[in-house]
Image 1 (cartoon, rainbow, N blue to C red):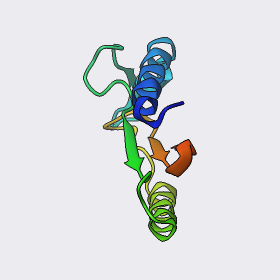
Image 2: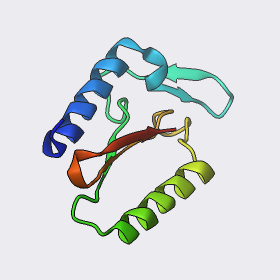
Image 3: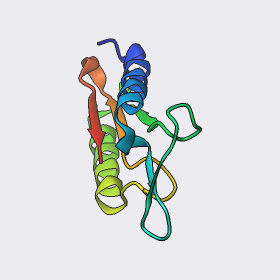
Image 4: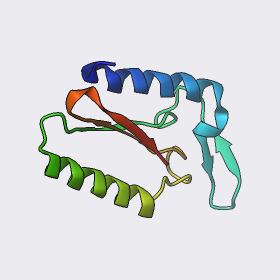
Length: 102
């Protein structure tokens, strides 16, 4: 897939998935109950964070990927205030992008 279209395609797929999978729109209240947002509600659909590294050097790519992995391994999604899914898209040279979620 063309890197310029990948983010939009992934965002579209997440939107369609969240429309059919209510747990992606669920929030946990302070008393431990779940509340499912309407599919069109603000913040109901996980947002894609894009890292465009297509023009980066190999060292810059390695550092950026290390930082993303570290961030995602130490701080996950907050089910009380946002989607329970964190999605990242990394665009690499030669259209070798990847998608990571937590």
